[in-house]
Image (cartoon, rainbow, N blue to C red; front, side, top):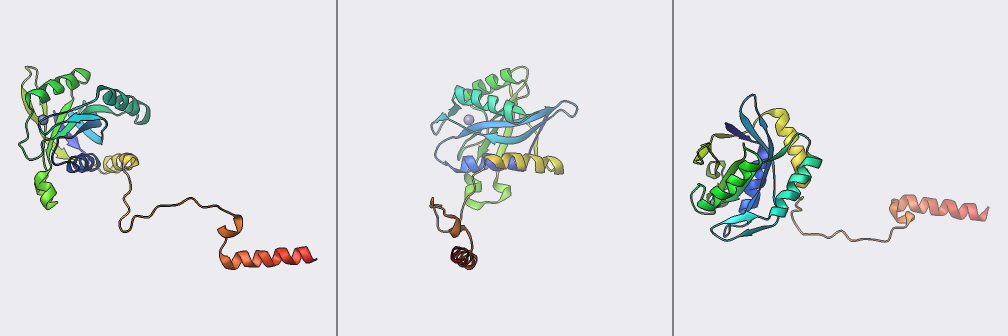
Length: 209
Ligand SMILES: [Zn+2]
């Protein structure tokens, strides 16, 4: 089996792993398995409540259940296809705890994968070549094997996964943070000043006639 991850999904994973270079972070991968080509496609990534140290991380069971439910209702044809986590500053492999976690994902979905990311080099350079990640799974004997992974370039799927996935991305305002305050609205203030004065004059005229 090979894996194909679309740009938005890897972007979200990188964004999350960059948010904490001291501790491991984790989340879930959303996608689908294409039986015909034996390819696992990763379309999106989500995260939720988790416990972490510098040496391990795990997602809350309720988080996984809630995510599975959300995907079922909101992303027809897609499902949870694995999980991701970071190894900030150390090599890319599955630890003994990771292997136990991965077993559980493969029990839920036999084609599930584990994506491991080390964001430290990329955090320094922001160069694509410094993006360090590997995808793993367990074979029938329970041994860790690496899954060959490419970043997807299928045009329609890049568009579709990006547009859908962007729904869960917050917009960032650069420059001075400005809060939009609630204001009392009266109809006259909604109109441009020149127009409101015209209407005012018109109303005065009506009143006089
Ligand atoms: Zn790990």
